[in-house]
Every structure is written in structure tokens, then in C-alpha cells.
Amino acid sequence: MNSESKLSQIANSSFSMDDFAKALEKHDYQFQKGQVVSGKVFQIDHNGAYVDIGGKSSAFLPHDEASLRTVTDLSEVLPMNEELEFLIIRDQDAEGQVTISRKQLEVKQIWEKVLEMQENSQTVQVRVTGINKGGVTVDLLGLRGFIPRSHLVERDHLEALKGQTLTTGFLEVNLETKKLVLSQRLATRSSSFSLLELGQLVEGKITGIKPFGVFVDLNGVSALLHIKQVSQKFIDSLDKVFQIGQPIKAVIIDLDEGKGRVAISTRALENFPGEVVENFAEVMASAEARANRAANKTAE
Image 1 (spheres, rainbow, N blue to C red):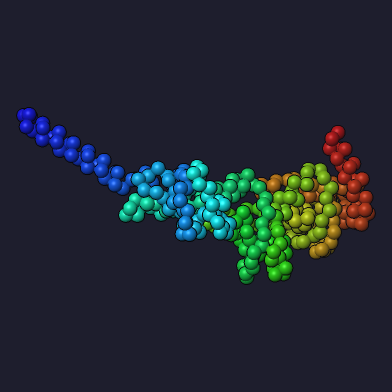
Image 2 (cartoon, rainbow, N blue to C red):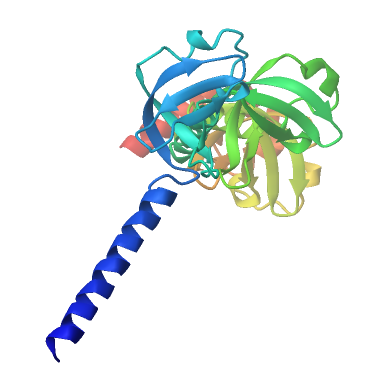
């Protein structure tokens, strides 16, 4: 390659690098929508605030993007010349100016906090803000959530719930679709579960009778009394022994909170096979002493 060709290559190379640098300078690619940036407010007017975020042009924060709460005086939430974080909500315009928000950053941080709460299986307090056919809308840290009717403890008189504070668990948290679905029943069950332990004598009401066993409500937790755990004596039909709404005492023999499963037994309370069937009232009346005796036998 001769010297003329080399000079031409260098010139072309130099030109393209300069051109690239100018293009970068012109577009300022370091700022993109969705990015969190730091900056200082240097000017406030009735439309919003102008913020120095280190770009060629200042960033603009519209008045209604200053905070989640309603603000009349922007200087209350945007102190001058103080380092603050902002979320870029609109890419650069022709002048290289980006639009930023404190409000959307707060929302983003709240969603991240809610996701963490869900991961930790926490229960949360929410305020009922509205009702519809499917359930109720609620407020959680400024976010709009929903509790389906089937996941409410009180399902029939939704009007009475408006304005009330409910303890709930999480059914779905989706940051992308901004979907937040909660459950009051899940929280009630979780709270009740924490009070249960193996070998404990519990009291509840029969809610269902199936060929394989009886379902019992233990303060929001559904427990199963399997037909084999009713008595030491064979039972051919549970309908002959129990009825819906009947109060019953039994001993917890299996507990699985992850699957929401509780197994109970009245068999463990019997002094002889068939006693639950022959003298149910007596077994229930002395259930506590019987449960203690059964626990002592197990310990031995």
C-alpha cells in the first residue's frame, strides 16, 4: 500500500470516528426511558421543574409528576439544588431534553416493595375504595388492587365494606401489567394456621360430609376428618353419624400450611372402638382430658 493510500485511509478513519462522536453527542444516548437518574432542581415554574441530570440539555419534570400525593407548591417536594432521584418517562425530544418523574419512581419503588412482600408471604392492610359485581377495589400504599368476591370473608354485603381496612394476602402481583390481586381469606387462613400445631385439640363446625370424610371449619381453616380417623370401629356411612353445622372437637394429626391441609382425628379420643358413634356427646364433653391422655401415650 503506497503512502497516498495510507493517508486516504487515515483520513477516512478519522472522519468516520469524528462523525460517530458527533452523532453520539447529538443524540446523547446515555439517557433512555425507564432509566433512573440523579439530578438537582435549579428552576421551578407553574408548569413544573427543570432539573440538571448531567446531560447537554436540562430535564423537565411536569407538575403532576412531582409526587404521588397532590402538591400545590412544588418546592415542598422538590428542594432546590438537592441531589434527588428521578425516573425518565419520555425519551429526548429534538432539543435533547428528557421528561422525568418523581411520582412514577415512587410507584416503581412501591411495586418492588409489594413484590418483596409477596415473596416473603407477608399479610398487608388495605383500604376498600370501591365495589363491583366481582369483588372490591382496594388501596395498598397508593396502588389500586382488587379482591375477588370469592376471596372475601364477607361476600354478601359488599357495600358495608367500603372504607373498611382489611388484612389480606397476595394472589397475584404483576409489575408489567400493573395487576394486583389480593385475598382476605388467604390472610385469615394464614393467621389461623399459625395458631395450629400437631397434637392440638381443636374445635370447629362441620361444613361438608363426603363418603371419604367430613370437612370441618377451624376459624377459617378447612380441616378433613377422614372416615378412617372417625373411630377405631368401621363406619359405613358418615351421614348417620354427623350433620352439617354440628360442632365437633378433634385432635390435629397432620399439618401442611404450604398445601393448606389439616387432618384431624376423633378416633384418638376414644376409650374403646366405636365410642364416637355410640356416645358422641360424652366423647366431646371430656375431649380435653382424652386429648391430654392421648398426647401422654404418644410421648411415652
